[in-house]
Length: 328
Ligand code: TYM
Image 1 (cartoon, rainbow, N blue to C red):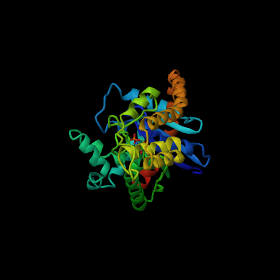
Image 2: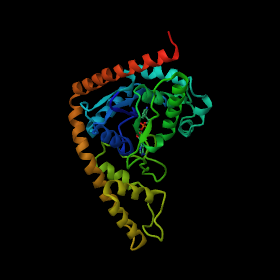
Image 3: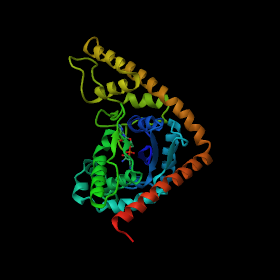
Image 4: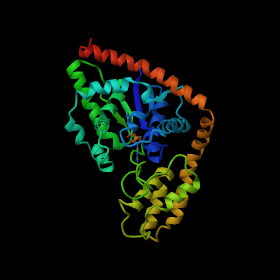
């Protein structure tokens, strides 16, 4: 293997939001433009069924993420772009790797506990096994770098543990995958609490949102009187300032901070400028998206060819692992 491999993916639970874009896709793009890396980006539809899902929307949601990837500038000439379930070796390796990690380790993960709290009636084996399938996604391609948001660090730790164990026990050569971080590795929620998340209503801005929609969503973000002797470090105002920094730069953030400590911030202006800045970044993405949306034959071809390329690597890894582990 000459070039280092990069693997990442996004669950097929709907279109991408700003958190996915800044925390993950911007990293995918950066690495795909570096000739030192071979990049593989997938839509994780098998992970999408670990929480309640609608069978009539699964394919559409999957396609929507592919469209978002292409719209953001991922290029099938530079990266393998496809869908997880089209390469069955992911689940094959996941089963093998599940023999190397305990149930207790999975139950103690913060991400598992969060999902249990969100969906107490859906605590399934697939949910418990989520991090093992994710480890399989990465190790199947022997990827050493994984562009993901900071929330995924506990899952990468599991992947590293499994890689170490496999290498020690069976002499496989899995690299211990590291996270590739972007500036937006943690995009806050518009609700003022926690991170921007697809499952929290009112927390996110989608890449497909219009300027009016972005303005409407930002108008609901909580604020305060606009002045005080200390700039808030958490909550609605802190989150807005972080978004200002991400979309309008740190100088603009500093200006608002001085206003907060002085004459006061006018949040209607802050929100309106921020909405424009976000929309300016999204507009070209939305235009590109329309082009791909109107060409489903091309999109299907990209997905199919990506799956063929990925399968070749995947089959080779499975062959090696089976040999090392003493299968027939
Ligand atoms: P998902 O669909 O939940 O998130 C996709 C990516 O978006 C990032 N992200 C964020 N980054 C910054 N701020 C936020 N508010 C924010 N919200 C989401 C996530 O960190 C992620 O990078 N488990 C993965 C999917 C997956 C995967 C893999 C990733 C399955 N197998 C193998 C890498 C390698 C996930 O949570 O996707």
